[in-house]
Length: 526
Image 1: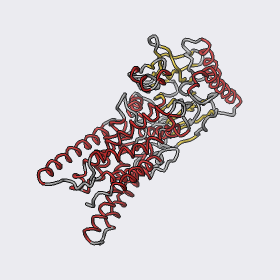
Image 2: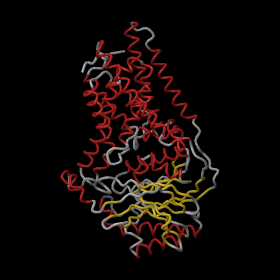
Image 3: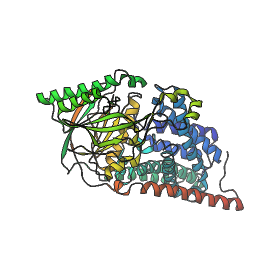
Image 4: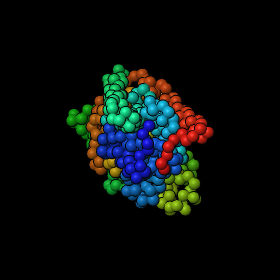
């Protein structure tokens, strides 16, 4: 194989890799650059020492995550953003070291380089999605492919399969260039273009294959008309909590206005209304005035409202982030109550509070810890069975799948983006698109400030709202039946691909050990 690139060039490639990965995600949406970023990192780390590979991966991680997660510093200061970006970059450092480690393996079997690249990316994401404190899956390769033909692969193997396909594509790109250089050196410039053309053809076939994956486009399970109420907040930022009465009033008033439009015949009558997360940060089960306001809205529109509410308890000093069904005439249906299962560490609860306070006293903004629910968000509204997840939960594979296995016909993401920006909201909507395809279900995202909208089972977005504005959108959705292959197999594709990543690392270790007895396994310039 061709020798490793010079270290200064590798550093530039690593930074370029991170930037290429960055612009694949919303709000940029240049999804073809994701495989390019994968290829650049693979080439930069090939035949490097482990510490150099780790350093190059870390540079890629910083170039990706620092700007991708910039919305985390809008209202909390720079420290949380810096710490989170450094933590996420650390996982790409592990990936860089792993890519360097498997160099003897891909040198021995060059045809396997694309597949090895793919499984290492899946293994890295599997680890990052779960550690620490339940992980942080933001920035997975799959979540930058909402406009790509590869998105359809989610119906077969979920986000892990899409990530594998993106990284496999990147591996094909780097392998094609590497093989071309090898042939050119060995044959004095003979048919050096043939390997590159072969790999390019494989990329085209992979993308075309994605288009051939069948996805749900029309429903056989009837229809339901749903209204999303995006009430907006008086001011963006963390002090939306201090505006909770105004936020609740905004959603009540928008719903009553919707009822007036329905009565006048200017809007279709919905079967269900969805309010976003934090639409009632005043506990309506304990505060009679808040409960009365929600009842007035439900009675006016005449259909159930899924309310995003903050509830006290179950113990003193604890709170819960809930999706609560509120029925006209009877009020809260406590049998149809979803409690967020994955509260966000350091935002909704503070692990290791004493230690965290030594780093930043900002953790004391979280005065009461949110407690996690224990059951999937399957909500029987009457007209339709909802699969409810709250805010960042949409990024976690198992939390969404559990609702579909439990019978959900419509995926619902209740979120509050008032402390972030439009880039974060669009990144979240891209995840909703993947989940709709993955499980063959229509989906919607309801946000306090935007972006809200509906998603068809084949991933198309409709009625997307603007950011930092009040909006009410109503749409008839066609429901689907059955389960996709991805829903049926669950975590199996990720487990298999991550297992193959471990096997690749072990195989490289064997080759390195043999190389230690017979000579260097890899020529490494540094």
